[in-house]
Structure formats: structure tokens, C-alpha cells
Length: 316
Image 1: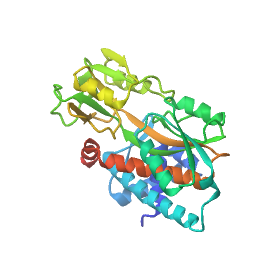
Image 2: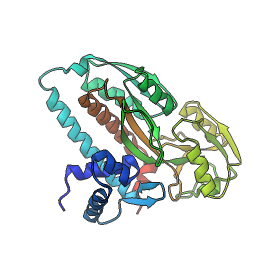
Image 3: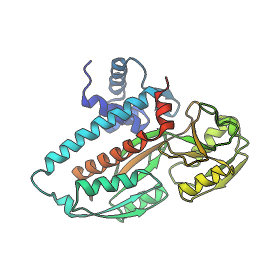
Image 4: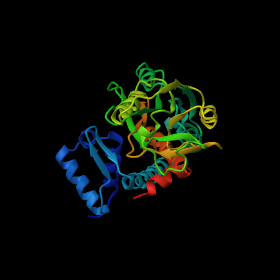
């Protein structure tokens, strides 16, 4: 089989949906046809790209690497298409105001920077919104045009037909430890080994957190001994971890400060999906593609600098 762009889109759709059947529905395939397509793609690469589980599918380590490169290729193709479409002069969407919201995501600065570069006449109004359910509500009420939100495998973001969404990336979650932690020399850490540690957890995000964390702990055979609810900035959180006050689940793109180490969790029990959501009546398809391409490029730049993720993705 000769690999084509449509095959890369299939892989990304499956990763974004967290399920072969949901990806099939989104692309207009039947579930058997999508499964056959995935088998052929995996045969081309010579090994499995996804692991099947009761909640759906998750990328293997090799699959995560393939997906990262697939998104890079697709983002570049989207950029080429956007450049070609804009060569005749500024588009109507470039002269409009875009109300952009974002949850606690490091993607936002790079996304905004790229939008300003590609659509200099676009007026941006950016809002910070923590809970993804609040983001959906603001989109539904026409108080936002687009936003970066989150959900989790098996817990797709819910919204009306007025709102559409497209995955940016599904990434594994890591754990941040004090640099003097007893497990600091381990390559990866079993979640159960942290049963007696104090945890810093962000509040309910309306999309499934911290429920997915507690479910993972339950599957690992324990309930966290101490939990501190924390909604400060990441730098403040890291300083508290560095002081030995607890550990925390963190995003793959986190840059640890001195005194903090970031480790993968054995078996990768926690995943998070970042997605772009937008009002279909407010954001034209071309602008939605530009937003998604900018968000994907921003994430790609961040993850390339995350040594702990590159080590995790490079292991067999």
C-alpha cells in the first residue's frame, strides 16, 4: 500500500476520537471499513499504532511518534492551501474580530502568534476560560467564536450542532516530582507507587477531570492519601513541588524548573485530548482550518522541546 494524505487523516481522526467507530462516523465510513483501513495502514508501518482497550483505542508509543509526524505533514499541507487561497489579497475572515477562548493550555501563545502572522488584519479578543463546559456554554450563547478546550478518551466533549470540534492532539499525561523524590532515578513510575504521596490536582474542568485521575488510581488499587486542590499558575505549582510538598499530573509539554523532574507513568493510564471548538455559523471553514493548523504547529513546537516526552515516545 502506498501511503497517502487520506491515510494520515484517518490516523489522526482515530486518535482525536479515541475510537475507531467514532472516527468512522465523523469521516462517513462504516466501522468495518475504517477497521480494515487501519489494519492496512498498520501493515504498512509494520506494527500496531493503537492499543485497544474497553474505552476505545490509544496510540502506542510508536503510534504517538507516527501521529506527531502525520500532524506535521497535514499542518504543512493546510498551510500551503491557506497560502494559496490568500494570494489574491486579504480574505473577508482576515478583516473580522475573532473571540477566542482557551482553557489551561500552553498552545495558546503560539496559536495567537501564528494567527497574527498569517492573518494580520484579524482582530483577536482572547479570554481565559478554565472549564471546557463553560467554553461550550459560551460558544452556544454566541459569546465566543472559537476556543481551545479539552476532553478525555471515552468522554467526548458534548455540544449542540451549532458547535463543531476537531482534535489538536491526544497526549499522555506525566507526573512531576520533587528532584529529591525517592523515585527520581526511575525511568517510569507505577501510579500505585505514589499512593502515599500528596497530590496537587486542578479542580473539576467539566470534561472529566479529576474523575479520570481517581478512576486510574482505583484501577491501580489505591485512593490518594492527600489531595490539594490547586488552580494557580504552572510556575507556582512547580515551586511547590520543588519544595517537596507533593506531586502532580502534568501536561506532556511542561518545562520543568530546577528542583522538579517529570516522569512517564507506567502503562500510560492517563491521556488528555486538546481540541479546537468553534461555532459553525461564526467561523468559516477556511478560518477553522487556519486555527487548527496554527494550534497544531504551536503544539508541535512545544512538544519538540519536552525531553521527557521525546524519551517516552522514542522507547520501544
